[in-house]
Amino acid sequence: MRFYIDKNRASRYILRVMKKTVSLTKDGKAELEKELEELIAQRPAIAERIATARAFGDLSENEEYSSARSEQKQVENRILEIEEILKSAKIIRSASHDKVAMGATVTVSLGGKKNTYSVVGAVEADPLNGRISDVSPLGRALMGKKVGDEFELPNGNKGKIVEIS
Picture 1: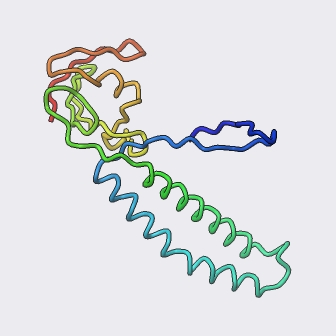
Picture 2: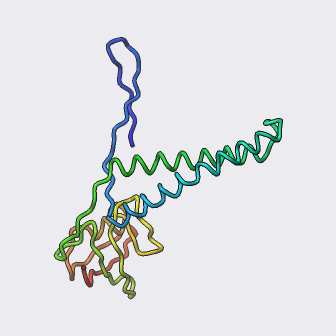
Picture 3: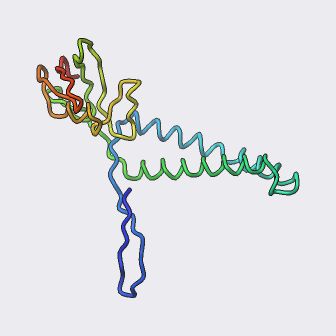
């Protein structure tokens, strides 16, 4: 999200939020929806912990209360974040197998090794598990390329696309 300040006629500043479209796969959307349900289900337990800790007395020195409030803040912030992502989500359709695009699974030969990656949106990226973002250096180098095409990374390493599925 980007924020900008706009002056209105009364010379007051209004903060406006410019929404950005987030690209997600169907699986990524399902994972976020599941996480959202789990976080919402945690709310009653956290509220109970806060109530119990509040009963201990002085809140200024009550570690249980501070801990429960901190957890509540983290959970509520993540819920808001997921809701915003889901509101602005654009589902990636299955990519064609001609060129590398969002949603494609690509096998590349890089530095003498073959690696397989799924090209996903930035929200779903998990490079350690073979899910690269379309805006990552490798993702940008691969986008639009065909089987047999060579690519170069910003660090100078070169590779070749072996398969697109």
